[in-house]
Every structure is written in C-alpha cells, then in structure tokens.
Image 1: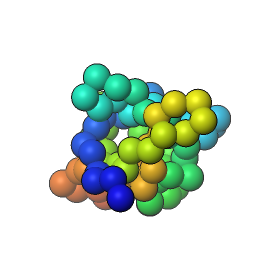
Image 2: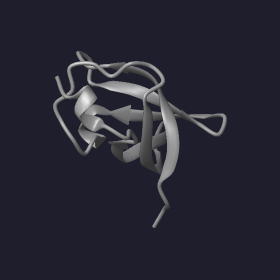
Image 3: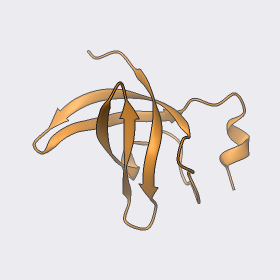
Image 4: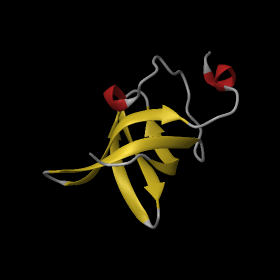
Length: 77
C-alpha cells in the first residue's frame, strides 16, 4: 500500500473532469472522481494536495486525493 505524497495542483479542468498534480519532479494524472471531497467549483493552480500514487496504463496517476489546507472551507463554494 502506497503512502500518501504531498504535491501541488498543476492544472485542473473541472469541465473535462481531469488535471495534473506535480510532485517531486513528476506529473500525476488526476480524475475528478479521485478527490475525496466534492464538488469543487474552482481549484486554483498551486493548491496543495495529498494523494496516493499509482501507475495506470498511460502513466502515473493520483488516487484518493484530498486538499492539504489548514482551512478547507475556503475552497467550498
């Protein structure tokens, strides 16, 4: 079982339902369904996140993603 990593959201397209997380020089694909808390209207670039890394058919993936903020209420809109 993989430990959670801390990364930052590089991009997230809520309409398309996917984005990328940057962590330790790597980029991880993330689908909106991987987020533990929903719904989000916006997730700005640079948002800190915790996630479990995995390897998909097309490369690195992020699973079980959660915001790594002191006050998550700031992002619930």
